[in-house]
Length: 164
Image (tube, rainbow, N blue to C red; front, side, top):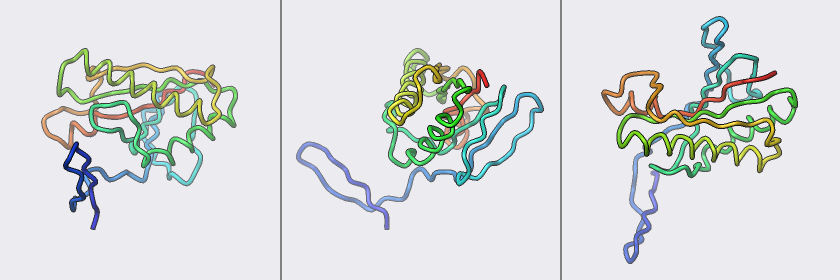
């Protein structure tokens, strides 16, 4: 049984909780040159090729904050290791959100989340010269936002390879 720790002033308790988010065990690589999607197992280093975008599907944040959850650290460490081994690579971390909320707040949140990923990478040995950030808010959905499943697909972090 999974437990959720609820900390509120004067009301700390543990309650049974079903997992809300399950990390996906694959990273999808979208190669812009061929428009193909190739699944890559997490056990491998993350392939970074010129003009490609890596969608990190198992990056999770605290709700409505830029705080990266520890469940994301393994994938981010693999990304950091990949970038450190490739001094020729420059990436752009791109944050995306669903469309629920104020559009400016969503834009700000997506940039703050991209900045959190950048900070994590730099703290783990990646040169600040290799990482740029951009937030898109809800402006670039990959699916419609009609239900929670679709909204969860639009809440994502993408790694765009700018230079190789």
